[in-house]
Image (cartoon, rainbow, N blue to C red; front, side, top):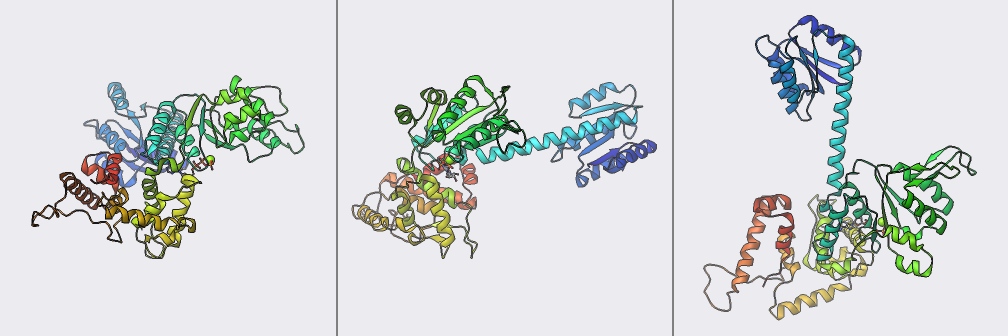
Amino acid sequence: MAKVLLADDEMTMVQMVSELLRADGHEVFPFTNGNAALEAMESIAPDLVITDLYLDRTRPRGLEILHKARSLVPPAVVIMITGFGSIETAVEAMKNGAYDYLEKPFKLDELKLCVQRALSYNEAVSENVYLRKQLKKKYQFNQIIGTSARMQQVFKMIERVADTDSTVLILGESGTGKELVAKALHYNSRRQLGSFIPVNCSALPENLLESELFGHRKGSFTGAINDKKGLFQEADGGTIFLDEVGSMPQVLQSRLLRVLQEREVRRVGDNVPVYVNVRVVAATNEPLEKKTREGSFREDLYYRLNVIPICLPSLRERRDDIPLLAAHFLKDKTHARTGKPMQITKSSMDVLCAHDWPGNVRELENAIERACALSETHVLQITDLPPELHRYASEASIDTAIETREGSPPSQFVVLNQALFPTTSSDAKPPSFGDGEAASGQTLGTLKQFIRSQELAYLNKALAAAGGDKQKASEILGVSLATLYRKLLEEGD
Ligand SMILES: Nc1ncnc2c1ncn2[C@@H]1O[C@H](COP(=O)(O)OP(=O)(O)OP(=O)(O)O)[C@@H](O)[C@H]1O
Ligand SMILES: [Mg+2]
């Protein structure tokens, strides 16, 4: 069922084609005048436009209609109808984005077939564009937060290997983002329109895992009532993600090795191998090398999997990313009662930075989620954070006190606090640079401090102008988003 705009100055032609298309269930908008068709096009928003090239007999009006149809969002697909001898203009129309053309006189069957092809082409295009946009958005690198040197190495590695077919082994503690990286590899590769199939190798008993991975033939074991495709076959043309591969039972390790060597799978109860075109990404939070030394993981499989290792740092090894991650998890949150955007106090941020996060990013994400749900106001306080974090509160405030007493620079979190999270306490007073002030050595800061304060003020101005949207603010300032974050986090002197 499609919306079809039909434009031809021959009334009989319009009637005949309209009837034909309506009989096929389409909604038809017929026009015998070019101007009227052009005027109505936007509000109709047709999926398909069928137009005569020489519409008003004087000039190729059809080209104007073509142009307008292609500039709609989403664009309509266009079929041109041409009179005898206007083949050159028809070619020009094709060059300008017409899908096809029909030369008069044409058979109705011909038209029907042409319409069918044009509509299925349109559907495929819009589906692909939509899917690609959604997936890209979800797994762009900028969804993996981190500006620390360790994360920069990870990004470089992802970029370098995403578009290859090499097997990747992602290593890292629980909650460090292994699945996120696996998805980023898939959705930034040329396999992105194929499937991404995650398999948790520790979640299923040996016999079930085998039939899940490789499939089975009907009757090959009790309960196998139908033929079943395995996940390797499901992932054909895409990526299979073998999560927690370290827990894979030994018997299956040998079968997996064979698949990696021969790129073929055999279903349980079947002797005929099936070729599969699959990229393998595996992950583990266990020390695989140690397991191979102890004999619980096959050494040859380890080498097959460990072609390109990507090691994800624990969160405590990249503490400088904590404020960014916290800001990321707070970004779209609003207070349930007041609807105000959630913010965080400086001391709460200090506490987040002091914790060791054994559950890594997942634990931080959950802590913030929980705090937002519990918070009385839209500003997160230490008391909103999980109880095990409260013990850092005094340490954090002692740190601040020492810094202030020794007159050392405000910590980066103070700066972040000023720039991104309007402070609720006034414990960090930047040096003053008021123009009208007496120029005594005690009230004046260093030149570096002055420049930094001007820079911060300007960054804040841009942020305010952009309504708090950092992407927009970075565009106003003419710097990248990463630079904006870095500048907001920079320590003062
Ligand atoms: N660098 C990051 N930036 C933003 N979010 C992240 C990052 N790393 C992890 N996360 C988030 O933390 C959560 C855990 O990530 P993920 O599931 O990828 O971890 P994992 O290493 O696979 O953990 P596990 O070993 O427990 O399976 C997810 O919600 C993910 O979106
Ligand atoms: Mg995982």
